[in-house]
Length: 150
Image 1 (tube, rainbow, N blue to C red):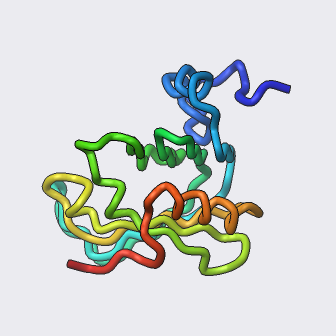
Image 2 (cartoon, one colour; image 1 turned 30 degrees about the vertical axis):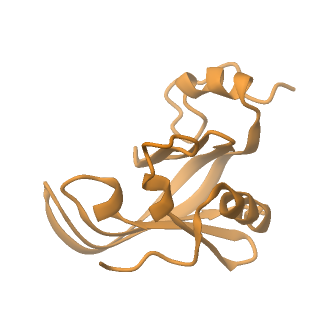
């Protein structure tokens, strides 16, 4: 069976089509598709207003290669950062932890990643490989723990 399915249309819980070419060049260290999870958004101030606490269930794909971190959800929310770009260091503001053995949490303060936004975002993805993925992300340069308010 191929690493990636050959038919990916509008399924946002699978790896988007434009990243498949990169995967062929740079082997994926982690590829998880159709993973259930929850997004926690705390005290967000952005162009569209202010929210205090929002939770949102999703199904997602998680891709980690030597060059990229991609977390895309069915709701259209996405973390898509290069891990090898010397000029784009936004990935240094991402935090990773495993609050439970099969739960991976990736969090950040939006002020560091998105212009005009403020607040905490935490993606919690259910996967049996949470510990392994956490170790790979820590080696890639993400910080251990949880993002904090600025």
